[in-house]
Length: 169
Image (cartoon, rainbow, N blue to C red; front, side):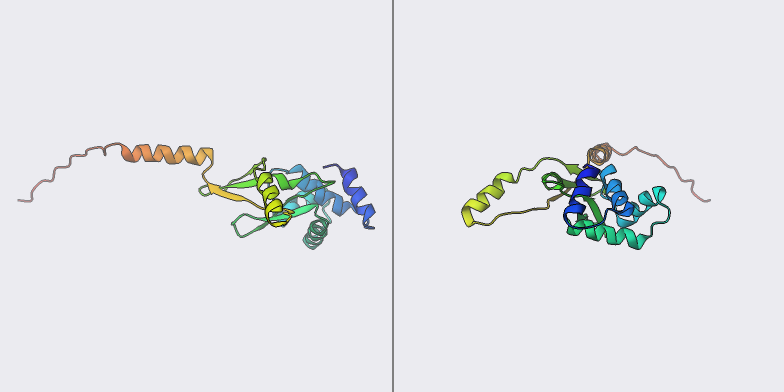
């Protein structure tokens, strides 16, 4: 996302371009494949602008959410996380989240296989899908390999250990 696009959107909506707003959006854009909490965004922005407060970051996130520039995501870990939204029609809609049940890693999958379904829904019931959210739960490659190795270990015969006890006289 370009800073100029963001500045144009603010201008069109009669909103001021502030350093805090730019830095929050820049933090999210720089971590495109990560899903940051407000506190993580705050830490990134604070590194560049130490005077910013956490409340300012929350207010900025709220404003950016209302502008559809930032989207909130809940990934089942108890935190609200944020990612970059759409700017000038480009953005977050065409990806889904793959959540590893073992390590809790979140992978963004950048393909939208639901476009055809959305078209069929519109044709069948005249319902226009604006957005959707898909979360798929399973095991990432690393955890899947570890699980398979563990299963292989369980399948091997146990090592035989012979122990002799002396009888008390």
